[in-house]
Length: 179
Image 1 (cartoon, helix red, strand yellow):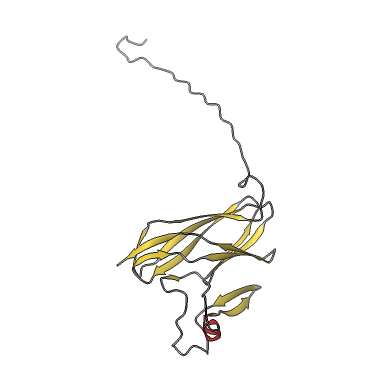
Image 2 (tube, one colour):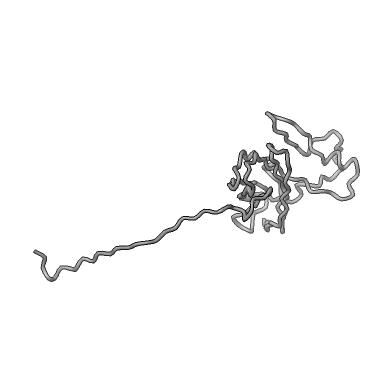
């Protein structure tokens, strides 16, 4: 028998009505990508590696076999000699083509290269692999700030190996480098 001084027990019943819904990433499937970019901090330290996190959404219904490549910014009014030095040396390995900049017999040290003046891209290319339609893939691009001040993250391009198509990514992501 329970004494009257014991605390009463309360039974609580909780009910919830839950509805799960799913929807397409894009309102209508498109031959395009939605890309979310972020940095962990808007301030970075000069000479210290930093990371740009990406989430790439495939807005089509078709799977894509993707590679990400850093894009060289176009240089207006470049001479033929500048273009030779600033062009990539291209190599193909296991069906993937990669370009490496900064290797040229034409460079005598007098031509100023038009890249990596502010942020050195540690990852020149990333193989992302197959991304199913209406799915996403996460990636990280690593950079090293080479000067102080406001630095703009370079543009990059996606290549769909299965369709043989290029997709350019233009953005306004930047950060401040301090010493």
